[in-house]
Image (cartoon, rainbow, N blue to C red; front, side, top):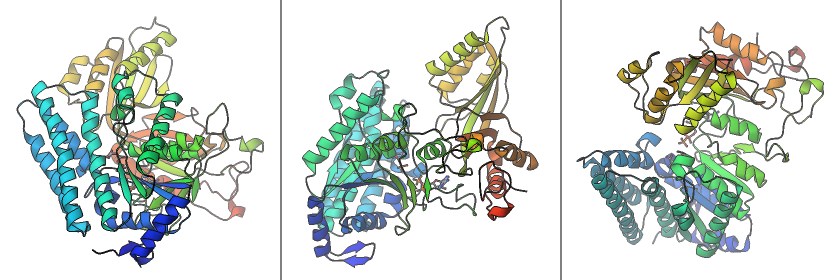
Length: 555
Ligand SMILES: Nc1ncnc2c1ncn2[C@@H]1O[C@H](COP(=O)(O)OP(=O)(O)O)[C@@H](O)[C@H]1O
Ligand SMILES: N[C@@H](CC(=O)OP(=O)(O)O)C(=O)O
């Protein structure tokens, strides 16, 4: 049996792996490593090397959290395929879901044969994969017959993507004689989640129950070796997909880190860390060595796909740093998100002090990044009833927003007009046209059901303009509000590049200035803003930010 192990430093022997394992049991501290679907799909040997490399350092036990594998991109990955299978099963008479499940099986089989060198382990893995997919097919057939899909069914089906991924990685380690145990968190708090109503509060006590259960599972099932944990966890009211959405495995990793009291949570990506702009769109973007939790949360929410927005809160409260690392370049230190001293009122994000009046010297002196969030729809709602008070008008609008589950990312309002930038649900379209009569909405392509029904509700008390295919462009940095002239420069750059601004938001957050622009102009906007606002020149030439040094606001 081949027992050579590829490590970060080359090839190690079985002895090294055993040493690593024995050092595990004597080391109480944990490092939690989360790997995304494309990393596991495209670079499994690099993922394995990153895990074993960390173990060999011997300083901590490693716990691994896996997302569902994707061979090429997230769109064609296992989770997306499972979503499509669910969609097909809901179409009366369609059997196409069976072909999708067969494709998922083939992809996992091929990966196993390609990467795992021990025939016996590969065949055991095949059986385990078949058993999981048989359960998925059974639920899908049932959905088709009954034409009824519960959140519970949806969560179960989607969760199997992470289970397959963990089975694969566990088998890979077994083939290398490294002890690894697959831990499935789908049925975490099973009794709790079955009884729980979708309106149940997602509060501190829920997360405490979840983290307690995770730690007792790991303690019970994996006394030694590497726990390989599904990035899907059960127990969220209304289901994980409804409450957290795609990218949920970052939150799972955060909860695992909290439950183990980890010394660090590592999110492994295919980029070196967080850059001051999307490095795939802005070639001159530079890597940020560290950012604050509030900046990371804002960046995540406003489009940087490096980390899920829900990840920060729990780990920061538990005083656990996050490090973003690159599977392709494990030697690079990546980006660190360091917990800041908790403010009892503001939770983990400590309010920056006004620099103009001599604030803390720890504060940054420039915006840290620019980001873009695509697929936004702007609804401009204007009241028809002038006699109604502004307060009751706003109350009506927000009641509709809540009832129809709209995800609002930006709001701006005057007395009788409200503009909402909302996300159109995944894979659902809204036509890029303005319409102001309800009947006409039906003639355009709004397949987003929540949005379509919300529009009908808004139409009862206002006239609605719809702008589709929009994007939010955001400038992010702690204390931005206090940086004199920053927003003027931001908006000027957009104007100079002939980019129209549909909506502006500044002031609600200390950390963010945002504008809504046409989606197709975002690349141009990103490059122009990065060029103008992120150039560093010698300190002496810098004149313009009160209290700042070394950062130049441009020409
Ligand atoms: N500020 C940013 N810093 C780093 N990556 C960013 C940023 N904004 C957007 N991105 C994008 O986030 C993605 C993160 O990396 P990757 O590991 O490829 O993603 P995934 O987990 O979706 O496979 C990249 O596609 C990168 O282009
Ligand atoms: N597999 C899930 C959850 C996830 O977190 O994915 P990733 O880590 O690959 O972004 C999804 O595709 O949404």
